[in-house]
Amino acid sequence: MRHIALIACVALLASCGFQLQGKQRLPESLVTLQVDPVDRYSDFTVALSRALISSGVRLVDKAAPDGAVLRITRDEVEERVLSVDARNIPTDYELIYEVEVRVNAGGKELMAAEPLSLSRIYSFDETKLLAKEHEKEVLREALARDMASIVLRRLSAL
Image (cartoon, rainbow, N blue to C red; front, side, top):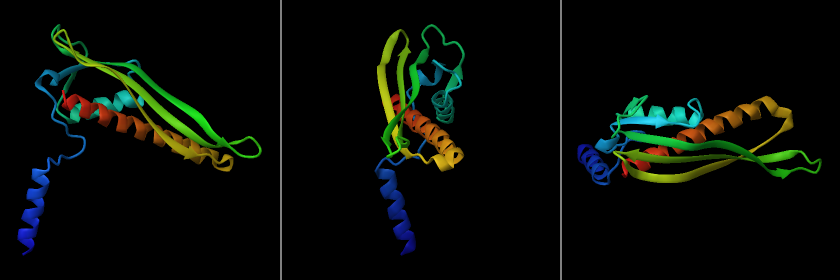
């Protein structure tokens, strides 16, 4: 009975299109890709490069004349104060990660410049300054990974 239930679960997962996160099947035109970033060492660029490599893409420094180029035209992190206490000290912040990417291949635009934005809210406590700074860094890295995952899904749909 257990074997039948296990086989049924596996068949259900296989039929619904389930895929492991991070592994996306990309079109043949994107197997070799040049990434042209605004900032080569930003969290988003590093996360996207890792995601592309794990999906089987070969990253090159200079694309062939008919090769694919992914341009990151915007890669910014913004922090806004959401609320303050009675002493006018911030208590909540919003961290916003914004990127804009476009893809060209073979002289054609495969994906037009598309602005993407993700945000997270975190609380601030001045008595725990070091911990809150670390939390902000962790959130920024998580936003960059999430954004890279979104871009990878968009590329797999081309």
